[in-house]
Amino acid sequence: MTAKTMRERASAIAQTGSLNEAIATGALPTHVDVSVSEGVVLGLLRQAVTKFLGVLGHGTTDLGEVLRVYEGEGVLRFFPCRNEVAMAHAATALAWIYGETPAVITSIGPGALQAFAGSLAAASNGVGVYHLYGDETTRGEGYNMQQIPRPHQGQFGRLTEVMGPSYTLHTPEALRDAMRRGAAAVFHPYFAAPFYLSLPINVQPKIITALRLDILPQRPRVPAQVPDANALAEAALLIRENAKIVLKAGGGSRRFAGEVRTLAEAVQGAVVLSPGSTGVLPDAHPLNMHVGGSKGSISGNAAMEGAELLIVVGSRAVCQADCSGTGYPNARAVININGDLSDVAHYNCTTMLPGDIGAVIRALLGTLGNGERDAEVETANRQWLESCAVWKREWATFKASRCEEVRLHDPFWNEPVLTQPSAVATVARFAKAQNAIKVFDAGDVQANGFQIVEDDAPFQSVTESGASYMGFAVSALLAAGVADRPQRMIAFTGDGSFMMNPQILIDAVAHKVRATIVLFDNRRMGAISSLQTAQYGPDFGTSDGVAVDYVAMANAVRGVKGVFGGTTVAELEQALKTAFTHEGLSLVHVPVFWGEDERAGMGSYGRWNVGPWVEKVERLYADQAI
Image 1: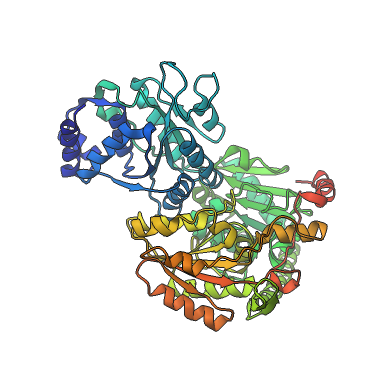
Image 2: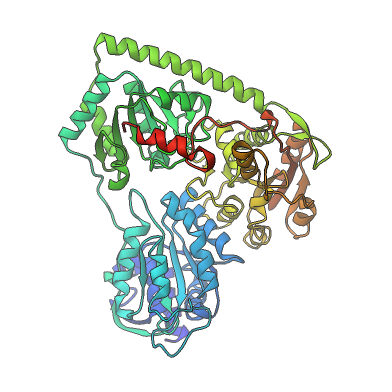
């Protein structure tokens, strides 16, 4: 297939505005002869996927040539990257934060394995992204360089299908089926997933004869589903009969913040957030009990402990969010609202309300009517909310004491430096004032962060708590250089997470990212050090004490501005102002304290089925009614 023929097709698409419009207007013929590589690109364009992040190699040269021609005509954009893990994170952030579905492209072998590893973040958080990998040839002429070196067929397809929907395009004419399955995964309405499309090297240039363009699958349109009237009536009765109600708002509730708030106010239930769902209720809302779970908060965990009826909204019951299954010791009934059948059936004693969260809540509210309870339940409900208000005030007072300017002498820095809560709270306040999206990396920065932030809407903070992937936050900043309507972003990262993916310093300049990295440096993996000291006493193997001049590292890349964040709140605030005036990527380096002083962190309030706690947690779980 010549570049001229491809260019003519791409030009027709560009002139009409989209592939779908080119098909509808007859600007393209109904049937075309195309290579598999071009067919895949056309299949993605049919689903309005026009942005491709890639690290090209010998396994994707043919696909790369198609992208070159189509980008030359302005039909799509290709963003070359330097690390496949970071690229996968950036693509996840683009879909998750900005709502733009991209495709990730790698070569065969190590590159594909790295992108596959990075896709864990998308798979864990229900984010749809296309992953296109080069793969071994289909003729069996011998091992291909960088394939999985085992004498079995379709090794990479077998590997990827463990993580999610997967397809090896062994037969060119199977393109239609591959794209149909891809659309079903990537655009799933309830819990999307990455879709892995393996493209054998020798198949990519093969010609598909007379491919009919209008049969290439488009994005699926799924009607909102709601449960039947009996299930809704059963749930309404439970709400009327119970006074101590908690709504657990998981990650799936973020797109339905208005409905969740209306439901909470209608049933007069306390709302407990997951680490990734801050902002579903405004921070100051009286029913917002803040985060609950293994880290949790005073108010969130107290509400979970006291609840008698649990209403779950869009939660997968991850161990950190429900204390490894022990978070609701007094709950005797559950109403679960979720689109996924496995998740909606997670707890015992459950009235399942499967379907679209917004539609289900609206239907439930209609069934509830005015929600009248008898006098005894109403009195108990008022008392319940009064208790919740006390816990909320207690948490606010405690949080304020930890987030004010606290400086402790650190032996590594050999001077007083800010505690991490003080530093994180300072940056969070600054981000909120600037209307910047806060993206938290894994570790103690993440754990302290979701306890500290005071969000009033979803996605003011993004906490990748599904996989808790080190390096996600800094890599996610690349999405601001790819998105149609980027927002200022601030990555909250530790020194350990930053060094997982420091190539953002280069990628950000290459793709004109304007964002800020705030690097909280305690010269260790602080979350694990703290876990070790809490469980066993001493920490081990989580710190090397190596001094790194991160400001010099940042300034070594032309176009990046490095700034020292200082050791006081005033110095950090000034550094943030300086960093924010920079037109490109900026990095603020903040030394923070680590040690066994209780003021160094926000504390833990729940249970977790790890280490020496296992026996107690498993005993509690075995006796949990739900």
